[in-house]
Picture 1: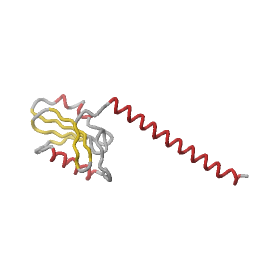
Picture 2 (picture 1 turned 180 degrees about the horizontal axis):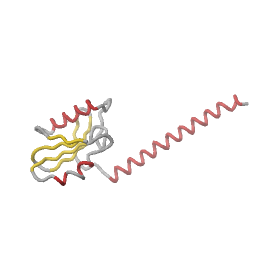
Picture 3 (picture 1 turned 45 degrees about the vertical axis):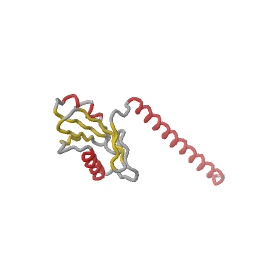
Picture 4 (picture 1 turned 135 degrees about the horizontal axis):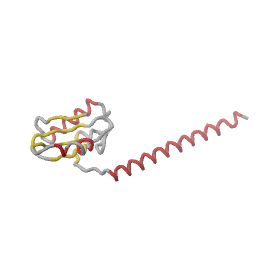
Length: 136
């Protein structure tokens, strides 16, 4: 008797697991859509080696580039620090590849040396000379 029920039991567990995974995927999609409505992209985009980098900038003068840490985004700097600087600075905050509104290039691993290269090329593309780098 147990042997004849076993395939149905396994099948039922697989269907239940698939339903849970589908439910989690839909919940993630719904949360992401709501977050994008509440906090839309507010800056510019630049293509760097297949990565689409989102950034904001304000002011003119000596460039300061703000790099956020893991699990953060450019708004952590924009909302807290940009208003504290006086004239004479070009303030630039970017979403690291795969964070915020920046999209990592296909096949990119997201490892730090790879992201550092994207940031180096970002600085080069914007023509920033000897920028001060601020990060956390």
